[in-house]
Length: 257
Image (cartoon, rainbow, N blue to C red; front, side, top):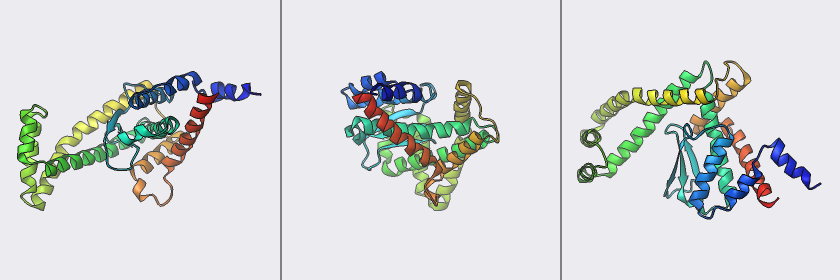
């Protein structure tokens, strides 16, 4: 009777039990995070060359791990490194599900171009928020030091100084400057996302238009981008929480049996 759970684990769920045991032995939390992320992404069919960048940041918020599809990054609060291994592993799996959802939208026929345009606009708006936060929190001297220390290029430095001046010229001028930046950058953002999309399709395949999988991909993608306005529990979170629970249990079973 004891053999049954292990057979289910190895065959039905296709979980590499020995790999999880190996991960559990890693002593340094940051190394565990990186190795687990790599393993999980490969297990769901997302290779390293197209996987979102894993970024560990010191944050004051209580947020654990968040997927920023507009930046194609997985942002990890350094506080997460203090969590238990099964919990951290399951959180990574949760976010990897959101990565799958976005990537599925990018390869869905009849919707993928719209998905690119939506994501490009969201991406550039998020980038501009970060950009102007930096401008507002930095003095001209701070920005000049960044340039002198060769941490930013001259072109970036010029744009930062111009933004600093725009803010001081009033709301109307500032908004006009922001619009010009947006219009200048959006073609490059779309080109970058298009390149990612092509890599995803090359590594996997397209999802046929009007298929059930296509409808799910479209609805999950929209719910990811508009979680704040969802009247009910976002569709994208239902499947994400399902894999969170199952991965947590599979980790425990793999560790102890």
